[in-house]
Image 1 (spheres, rainbow, N blue to C red):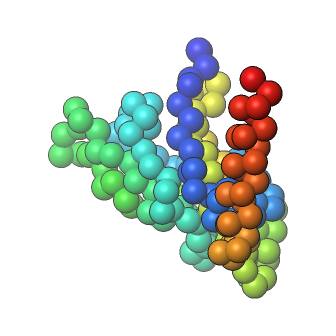
Image 2 (cartoon, helix red, strand yellow):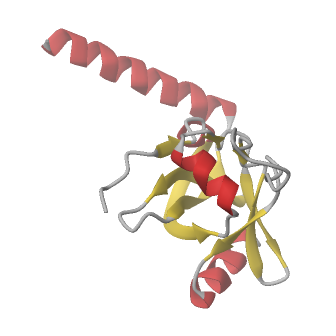
Length: 149
């Protein structure tokens, strides 16, 4: 099977958060959801992960309804279950209970087997002065790249 070039990114994530650890999780999807993802019709901007009982879910991940779907089409912003090993889930749950940590989705992609995967990160929120320094570093790097060309 040919590798897919679908990579939907959460561009605000690295600006809003310090990214500590990254994990790749499977997602439980319906048929019309995977078809929409393969068409590139998904958005991660306002989404986050949360625990319900001992299971991990992603909330506010927007997957557009499939254009050719019938009455069996999916709800665009429903909660979707993430699939990780129990050991990883226990570790994440203890880290989230620490002050300031959260789980955010970074990249939604289709792997070489054709399965949808979500890269999530354990993150800590930035303060406004940290965001300003991030912007300053980005500008300096851009200026240096221009000067070298």
